[in-house]
Image (cartoon, rainbow, N blue to C red; front, side):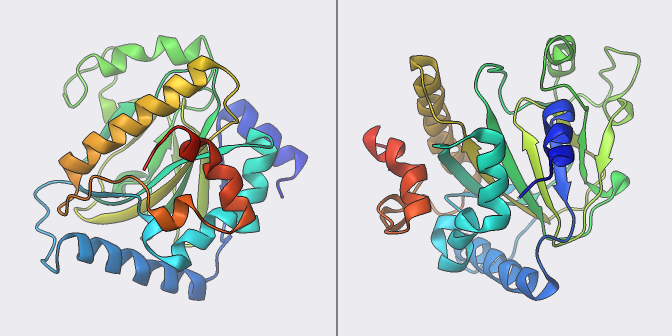
Amino acid sequence: MLTPEQQAHFETFGFIVLRQAFSPAEMAEITGEFDDVLTEDRQGQAFDGAKRQGVLGFIERRPRLTRLVEDDRIYEPLEQLLGPGFVWVGSDGNLYVGDTNWHPDGSNLNYMRIKVAFYLDPVAKESGCLRVIPGSHRPPLHEDLKPLMERRGDATWAPFSALPAEVPAFPLESQPGDVVFFNQNLWHAAFGGRTGRRMFTLNFAAQPVSEGHIDYLQRVYQGNLKNIQQMQYTQTGRVYTDTFLHSDRPRIQSMVGKLVELGFK
């Protein structure tokens, strides 16, 4: 459970880091499963570092990873922040290449979504940790930062007289075992990381209560189908697994019921 102070930190700044929430033994097991899933996607081939490898439906592929979504250390903070009835959006496991420039994961400021990130290697400010602009999940700062996206990927673009890597930000330096929770409207980036740095995310949204919320979930689902084509080595055409969508675990059932209703697979 988050303390009132931690909850206020998240609501005000848009993120919270739970330090060493998972033990070294747990992280060794989780990391082994991560490496196995991504190697399986590459059909046993070595990672060549030419482009990012992203595996959608990542945690759904292994029972040990699937249990993370119902673990009290993940589930209870999410229920505090998103409220009851929150829904599963998806997961991805990644080997990153190069910098990730400034962006939010969407700009629907009327629908709360949270990304939970696990970094499997130590990352610092100059070696690929997540950098965030505190408070940028809210207007007016969220909108004020949109010029950063006008020439995304251009390392010389400096709309605020600061190059992308020099934009004022807070570095979420991380060790394996730390867990990062952040509002998906928060502007974030990463610079200087080594090729093949490992990270996976779990993505959730508040209970959908409007057509706009349903439309968002449908657009993300369609976007993830495209991401499978662009980032995965093995094409499955599936974002989720039947085992996950039809789980007999109560917490998972509560998260995926709306996805099943919408016909996602």
